[in-house]
Length: 167
Image (cartoon, rainbow, N blue to C red; front, side, top):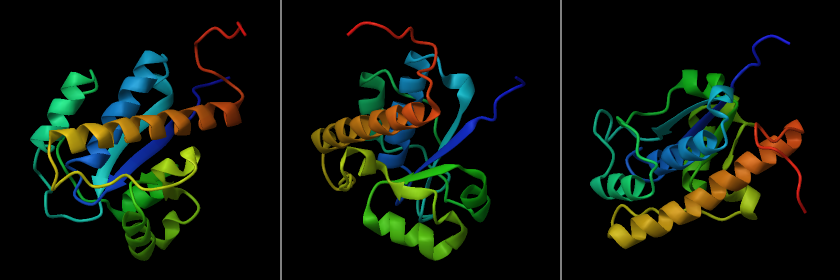
C-alpha cells in the first residue's frame, strides 16, 4: 500500500494563544510518544483575529514547557481553507463551535467539541485566570486529546506502532 493520507487535525479556540495551542502541543506530544507523527498533520487557530501574529500566552508556554509539549507557535485566525482542508476540527467550547459553523457551514460534520469523547463539556478559558487555571485547562485538554486519539485509532482498527498484548 502506498503512502497513507495523513489525518488532518485542527484545534480551535477564541484567540489561538491559550487553549488551542495547548491542545496542539498536547496532541503533538502524544503522537510523538506513540510513534504516529507521520500519520498526522496538526495545527491550531482562533475564531477571532485579535492575537494573530502573536506568540502563545506566556502561561500556556510555561505549562507546555513543563509538560514537555512546547512547540514554536504564532497565533492565527481560522480560514475557509482550514474548514475545507482539515478532517477533524476540535473546538474548546460551544461558543467556538457556533462561530465555526456560522462562518464555515462546510465544516459541519467535522467540527465538534474536544471533550465530546469524554462525555462532552467545555474547556474553560484560562485567559483571565492565573497559571494554575492554565495548568488545569491543560490537564482537561490532555485528557480530551487522548480520548480523541484513542477513538480514532479504534475506528481505524490499528494501534500505531505499539505492540499489543497483555491483559
